[in-house]
Structure formats: structure tokens, C-alpha cells
Length: 113
Ligand code: AMP
Image 1 (cartoon, rainbow, N blue to C red):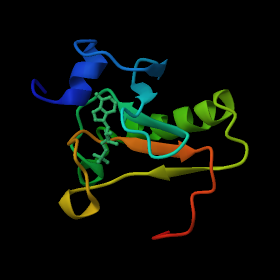
Image 2: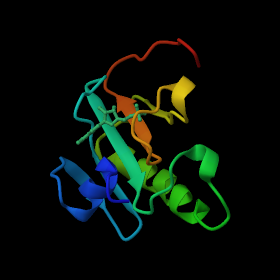
Image 3: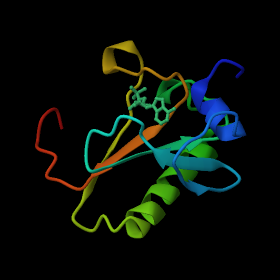
């Protein structure tokens, strides 16, 4: 997608603080961190949101969770972490390319879930 900021990060057209990449998934630190550790795990295929996961693209989404588990070890998140996906306007999704926030490094509290 030409005007998608995460597609531009994936293609290398704009820089990111990348912590992981394989053939299906990239992970980079959030530019506006909301916890001491805050990174995004993003499938390389442009899927707009969790509402658009299908049998054709779900393997990339599944790989995201495999990568989250790997990065939790790499980033030493043994005290716990939270995975968040915002889907659509009411959920506050601002970048229309599916991504999973991983937050950690402090007690995150019990609001919402
Ligand atoms: P969401 O609101 O769930 O769509 O999350 C989008 C996230 O992308 C926000 O937390 C932003 O801070 C983050 N973000 C936007 N642009 C960049 C960028 N160039 N590099 C890293 N993170 C970004």
C-alpha cells in the first residue's frame, strides 16, 4: 500500500528502531512509547485490521504471536507483558495496517482488561 506508514517501514523507505525481522513479520519500537518497553509486531502483508483476518492471511497473524513469544525472551519480559490490538475507529486504531502492541517494564494496571 503506497500511503501506508507501516508498509514504508517494511520496505525500508522510512527508518524504524527495528528489533526483529523475518520473511513474514517485522517488529520495531513504538515512536511514542506508553511503557518502558513498547514495541509493535506487524505482518508484512498489508491487512487493514483484525476485522480483515481471513484464511488467506491468518498464517502471518499467527507468526506475529510466535514472534511475540520469541521477543518476550529476547527483551527479558519475564515479569509479564500486555499484547494489545486496536481494531477500528472506536478502538483508537490510527494506523490502518494490523499490528500488535507489546507493552511491558512496569505494572500496567487493570483498566479495561
Ligand atoms: P494504533 O493507534 O493502535 O493504530 O497504534 C499505532 C502506533 O503506531 C502508535 O502507538 C504510534 O505511536 C505508532 N507509530 C506511528 N508511526 C510510527 C513510526 N514511524 N515508528 C514507530 N511507531 C509509530
